[in-house]
Length: 297
Picture 1 (cartoon, rainbow, N blue to C red):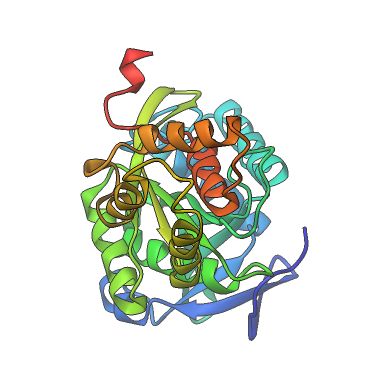
Picture 2: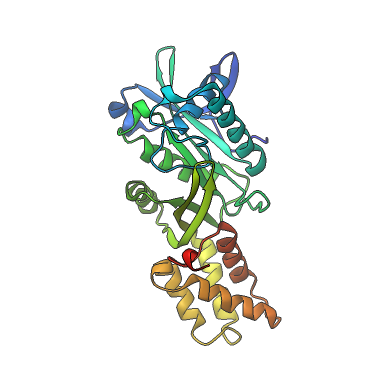
């Protein structure tokens, strides 16, 4: 994998140097370490702890191959399967995994891990639409705010990690608590995540539903508005108003599925609106649909 982002520090794990940066100053007292670092990658000495922690979760995700109550229940077979899934996530989806490590003197303690990537799916690569994806917190350090820390850090990372400035950031969750962390990121930057619908995803533990959010950055949003104005005479009557409402209120205010159908109809007629087509292609690729529509198909 290519090395992205800017890291001013390095740390050694099992004799190998990894790029790192200090994070989470406001969380140090709660977590109980004088320093927390984000490691760009997964050191071998941490991989087992990451995989074991991923099996103990309230909501299963693709790093979870067997939903368990404690890390002591993780068998060698489950550990091997978990490592394979982790490797596939990196190989097939280009996931960049940060490990969050507590530092106390020479002691390095695994706290959490989380990924970002520049592929919406295995076959859809576009660094302009980065994803804040999988994450896990070590069971022994849960309830200390680390879930918020790793969301905030990875949101920030999407703005500077890959080679291009994002058009929009994708994030999915079913947790109101995690959404609170997203709001802090929004307030800091003046951005806003839109609820664009619900997505079904499958893991070895079953099939689940999650809420999808997309955060169009200001430049991209302005470009969308300009295209609405430029092609207003060719767009369906009222489309511009409905789309602007969608950008304010998301799928709770306007049907994203209906807007996508209108854009598809224009394409059939030979009308090209590239940015709007791109926007709804991204939504479709993510797998987002209007609430409650999954059960009807």
